[in-house]
Image (cartoon, rainbow, N blue to C red; front, side, top):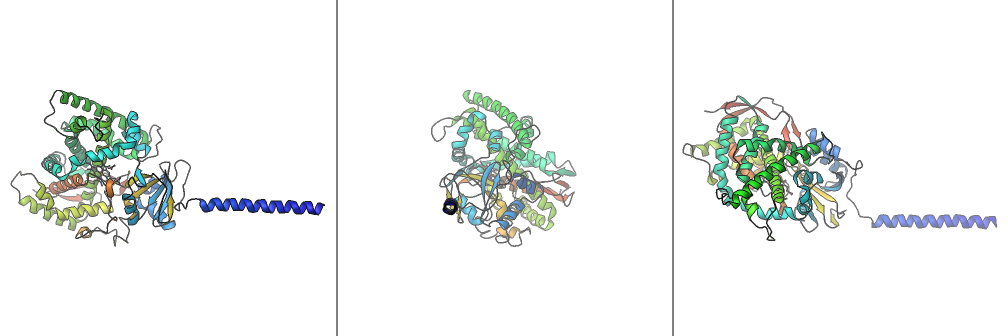
Length: 479
Ligand code: HEM
C-alpha cells in the first residue's frame, strides 16, 4: 500500500510540475519581444548614467555603450521615471519621424510641463497644444515673414557687438550670445525693446534649461526645483505683459505691432476659440525656450570652431567680406545676401553635426508596434537622438573631422543628419535659426579675428553643449 501511495505522490508532483512548466512557457511565448536593455534603478532608472555621460563631455557614450551591447537599432532603458525605447539608426529616425499620430504621439516629460505650464492648463496643454501651436507658427516663421526680420536681426546684432564686444579685448561668448538671442526673441515675438524688461526674464530663464530634463524631485537646490521657481517668476512677468497688451488692444493702441503676442491674443484658433491668457503665456514660454537656448548654443559652438580652425575662419571671412563689399555703407543685410552665405551655412551644419544644440525628442506609443523585430508596448516612451547617427562612421566617415564639404551637393544620407529632427514635428524654427546664426557670423567675422584664451576649453552638456568656462575669446578688431 505504501508503495502505491508513494508512486501516486511522485506522479502527482511530476504532472503538476509539468503543468506549471507549460504555463510558464506559454506565458513566455506570448510575452512581447521587448527591445534588449535594462531598466536600471527603481524610479530613476538609468537617468544617472545618461546625465553622467553628458556631464563628462561625451553624451554619445550612453548610447554607444548600449548599441554595442544590445542592438544597433533599438534598446530599452528607463529615463525620467519612464519605460523608454531609444531608437538608434537612420532607419529608426525615419520610422519615428513618419509615425506621428499613427503609432506615436507627442510626449513631454513631466519635469518640462511642471516648469513651463500653468498647473490650471496642464490637461489642455497635454492634449492638443503642440498641434495648435504648429498650425499657428508657420505664419510667423515662413520665409516671407522672416524676410522682414532680417534688417531687425542685422541691426540688433550690430548694436550688440558694438556695445558688448567691441569695447573689450576679451569676452565670454556664451553669456553674451544668450543675452543677444533672448533679447532678439523678446523683440520679435513680443515687441519688447526695453533692456530692463528683457533682463527681468533673462535670469529666471537661465535657471530653466538645466531642470527641463532632470529627475522631477522638487527639493530646494535640485536643478528641477530651480527650474520650477524660475518658471513661476517668468509666468508672472509674462502675465503682466499679456494683460498690458490686452489693454492696449482693447484701446486700439497695438497697431504698431502685429507680432506673435498680439496675434495669439486676438485670433481664434482652429476650433474658433480665443486663447486664454495662461495658454498664451504657455505658448510664449515654450517658444522662448525652444528658440533661445538652441540658437545661443549654436552660435557659441560655431565661434568656438571659428576660433580653433583658422583655415575655416579664413574661408568664412572671404565669403562674408565679398557680401560686405557689395553693400553701401550702413546698408543692412537682405534675403539675397543670406542666400549667398553657402559656405558659412555648411560650416554651421558641420558644427551642429559635431556638437548638436538639441539632443533629440521624446514621443509616446499610442498602440503596440513593432520595430526591428521588437515590440514597443502602448504607453512606453520613445527617444530619438542626434547622438546615434551624427558621429557614426557608417554615415559620416572620419566622424571627428570638421569637414563642411560633407554638406555640399546632396549632403548627408537622409535621416542621418537630424539636428532639427524630421517629419511633421521637425523644428518649425529652422529657418529663423538659419537667419539668426548667419547674420551673427557675418557681423562677427567682418569685425574681428578670434583667438581662444583657453585652447583646450572642455565642452560640458547641461543638457545643451556649452564650453566649461563660457568660451573665453580674445578679439582682434579688423578695422
Ligand atoms: C539651432 C537652433 C535650433 C535647433 C537645433 C532646434 C532643434 C529642435 C528639435 C530637435 C526639436 C524637436 C523636434 C521633434 O520633436 O522631433 C525642435 C522643436 C521645436 N522647435 Fe526648434 N530648434 C532650433 C531653433 C528653434 C527656433 C529659433 C524656434 C522658434 C523660433 C524653434 C521652435 C521650435 C518649436 C516650437 C518646437 C516644437 C515643435 C513641435 O512640438 O511640434 N526652434 N527644435
